[in-house]
Length: 231
Image (cartoon, rainbow, N blue to C red; front, top):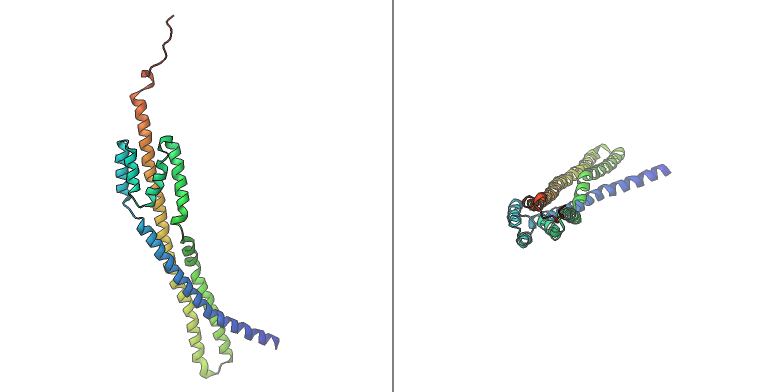
């Protein structure tokens, strides 16, 4: 008697949980859409022609126009320009300082352009399992009713199984956009970091060329030395 009561309670809980899974998936779907729209808007607002930015920056650096280079970076709305502009404030300290500050600037901004990716990745990997969980609970309820139902109620049992399978379909439907969006935004973050490194390499190369040009124009052998007294 006690086992039957416990089984009835478990079936009742499974019936409620199977319905709750659908509401959970619906809520996760809404949150996922919100994150996707926010991430799209974030990258759209900061989109810029990085190749053109690099060319303008290189032209200014070749003229040794640091103020012009800073204006080129300030005119850009991209994350790359903001990170490079921070590194440019250390231009007078040498290539090593610029390189270190550039790495720091990227690390500090990584949290901003990776926001929401953890949620999308987690949802994409697990939404189908949440749906499968709801399907299992629904089938348990349907099979329990099958054991106690008359032949005329077989249609209701099959309808319950069909409704249970909907949870798996909804889980897959929620997971697909999350996975696709995660991959797209992850690629954008990688491109962003590569663009920063590319522009940073341009600045470092220009700094080193100026330094090497100085030594080429004034080789060690031609530099004035202290006069030695004649023997």
